Image 1: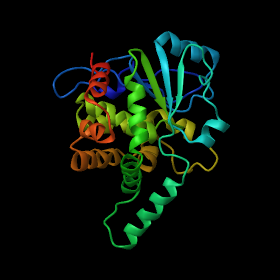
Image 2 (image 1 turned 180 degrees about the vertical axis):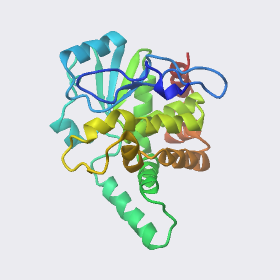
Image 3 (image 1 turned 90 degrees about the vertical axis):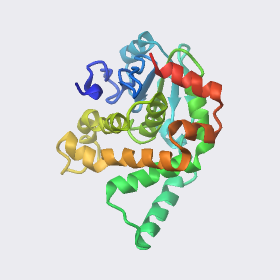
Image 4 (image 1 turned 45 degrees about the vertical axis):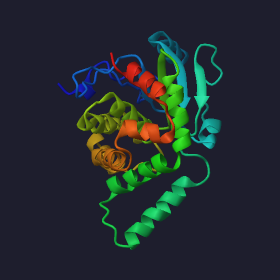
Length: 259
């Protein structure tokens, strides 16, 4: 059975299309990641009252919003003033033009003759730039997720890029095989293509989730990111130590991840 397609994986909510539990993944040592502890998601700004109540009943007590300041201002998270859920805005990539800088550097690499192979390379280059240049913020995100014993949800806009990198770090720490981490990243396409097709400027050639995956979240992208983490930091746990997490915090994250 494909673990990514477990019927418990996706939470069916009216106001968010890509809300998923990281539970149910088998690790290399034979453990199973815990259901109901870490959730990854797309934007929360359209959640209905019933959606919010369903998440609270699911055990949600912490929300980490990874979006930029302009995104949170225009589409505020419905939990930002909640009395039941602690809301944390931790801007993963910042508002200072990092995306533009990384795009320019990528273009320079291409002009210099670097071997790049389309969208997967371009996206991976961006993700690795976040991991390398926003380490203090990634540390704050992981520390916040480690803090409590209850369900914590982290999200960006589409639940794909910033959220996908954060999910990969957690699953990697738990010892989930790389092929499963890669598959979890690519799963966004299945749950997002219908929403994507409603957006202004959507590519009309994107008709299926496979089309969307090739264009927006090709699995080989995440494999490149995992390779970068292994080569430069010794893996996900090594990266966490490098950004400043202590062994106790790493232990709390691991304990939260494993059933």
